[in-house]
Amino acid sequence: MASPHTIRILACVGIGLLFATAAPAQPPPPPEHPAIEPAALDLLKATGKRLAEARALSFTALTTYEHPARSGQPLYYTTLSEVVFQRPDRLRVITPADGPPSEFYYDGKVMVAYDPAVDLVAVADAPPTLDAALKQALDRAAIYFPFAEILVADPYANLSEGLTSAFLVGRSKLVGDTVTDMVAIATDTVQAEIWIGVDDRLPRMIRTVHPKEPGEGRTEVQFSNWQLDAKVAPAGFTTPHAATSPRMPFARPDAPPVPAKQQ
Image (cartoon, rainbow, N blue to C red; front, side, top):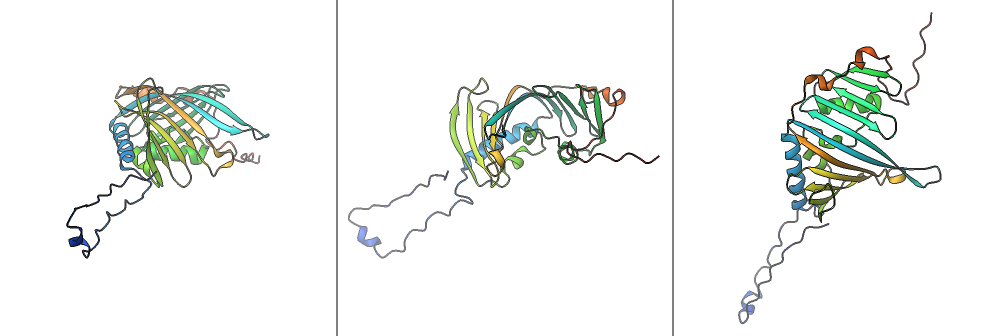
């Protein structure tokens, strides 16, 4: 959605002929990308700043995934996650429902994935920053959090990288029990709409679609129960199951099985 351009027309009755041979006025330079509204970027920057400056954050994320059935009919799956993190190197994500429950812990040195349904735990050494830990969890074990974009060190850079369009949609009074500004953004591979609190600049909902993926990969995350800079004891980012529960490999679910050792 292109930004509006103001065109000024000079009309001088009686002296128009004096300007008939003058050089034409130069148009204003075009924006770097005509489909990106500065006002939309300002909102993303405000949100990114709000998130990045908070040393600790906790929230509840209700995520709905769309996935096609074999018949092609879209099916919807929902998960609830309780998230606590401290910058730069602490994260806890407890997902009790729906689907298989799971727990994830990261304390700056070790990451732990625990499956309470079968009492199995996977443990791996981890890099010293949350950004690197999230990437390692994805690469090594296909662990992905749809709200990871707001956990990184620079949320604005993450949200604005590669944008091909960004514009304001309007305001809503129905999302997150507050008034929100709606911003639509898009890259070559992702289209998203973000509801941002007018008063606190915290995200209240994000809807994304990946138009180049089969079934378009639609996801919706609703955020609630925001708390900023609440203190969490270091023990809150670890679990005793790392030492007491049977181990499983910290690996992707689709990884080939490790062959048994020869006796």
